[in-house]
Image 1: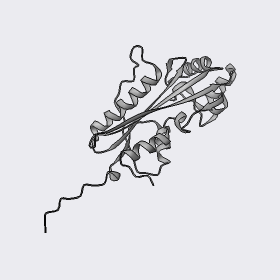
Image 2: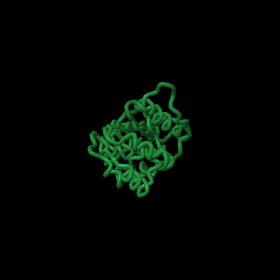
Image 3: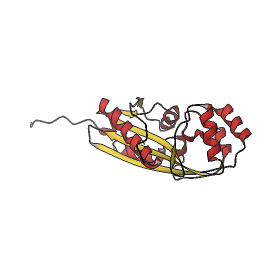
Image 4: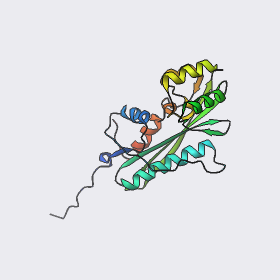
Length: 204
């Protein structure tokens, strides 16, 4: 019989890695009921001079996915980043109560675009895709007391723009306009499904 070359493993069995330490993204990806690991990307998140919020989010998402993929070249790696865009100014994670108060005071009565970027990379196959889910959010004209009560209840200091919409933060808002319902929480799952399917991860 002629020699038979071994069949390469199906790309659907490639490891899936979430390149993020965000518990929100981990919970969202868990909805897809596919096994995945989590790895922490080592990326400097400092904005570049003149970089707009959308470009910043997209650059960081790609950088995070590439960084983790360098350590796990056989895996399909998901990277994501979110930047709140207030009239062209990027607002990141506040980190402290005082900064969160200042962010929400500036955003009250305003339309803020939450730029949620996504990248999927697999070095072994040369696969790389990225996309941006922009979510337009209209904030209510919040009182100082409402801001304080919300922050004490949710402590959203690790959320871009201090807005944790999946909890009490929904009471801060007048309207949300988007085409990918989980994007505001931190990981646009419609886009994620499309990209990891294209990378060879079987979902259904």
